[in-house]
Length: 458
Image 1 (spheres, rainbow, N blue to C red):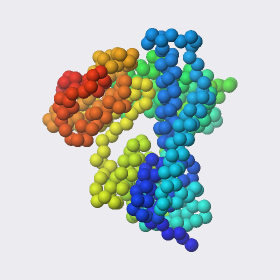
Image 2 (cartoon, one colour):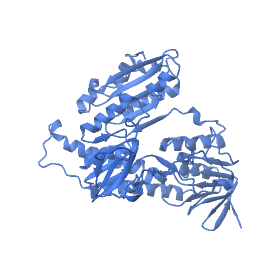
Image 3 (cartoon, rainbow, N blue to C red):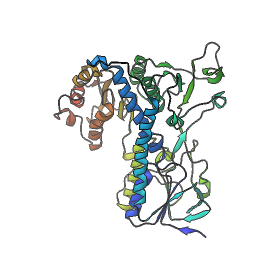
């Protein structure tokens, strides 16, 4: 016999706990179902653990550069990867335990551990139970994508999840994939002491970014001894004794890279293939993502999809914003929409890239009259004082409306500084608003008005 609930939430990624808290506040009896890790990707194998590793890697880098700052170490710094992993595990555990306690305090929410499948438009099965509700919310996330590269299935590989269990320094780590996840791991493990080679199919790293951004990121990694091989359109992988070789199946000659360990970082695929979405009448796109409208509603009445599985953003912050949109529409009579948000994200190498709005290339194609400005970080006093002068800042503006179109801050604190521009974009104010603002000296942000003062026609 079916058990009745007011709402069913499948998956406990970034959107789900906050949504459950709101459902609980509204007094709605809710079933929250999780088959694996409470908190999903971000808490367990994504943002929190990777940024913890990045922090340890930065500490190692600062120790390696100590003499640059007038600090003399009695012995060369040594990385203890078991201690690095233990620190990462402790941070993850703190987050996971805090999440479990938060959910446990929700009076109207029942946490069910198991694999949920849709059984009909308003029905879910889990652990032999059948649950029914008028509202169902899917927050099932995504997982690492394994591409059809010849030989890949015949060699041991790592992905973003299994990398979390590594407690040693690989002799030579080969990273297949020159995008956000791959580059963060590449730099971190180089700083831990591994030899690192990045192999990318496209002609350049993170090809969605402007060419000057890609080139500078490649230069930053190169200065730390990371070997980057691009244009590998026909990769193959094979065992070579105790090592693993990555080569080109379409060409003869020496391999692109040969290492002891391989990390595959080639994107994500949604966890929708074992959800039985067809039984609820939910449409998927050709990549398996759940099709949603501007307010996260699926093609099935009374079912919403939030987070990575809806293909409308691949970040923790877009997932949480999906929750805000759904809650605003359901309970606050506030018609918020996905299309209201401005694309923004970061690449957490060191120094980081903070991005908001259009790239320069997108601005060129927009049909608008565009003004652009660019400033090297070596001209920023705070960056010189910190000994962190790599990178640059650039911005694009609509010449007619004076509205900011987009920005890229690749440099010291770029992932934080970009928000000063993003907030003005959301406010719909002209760029002169921030140009005329008085900022604190010495900071990176204080040079944003100077950057805006250098605008020229693109």
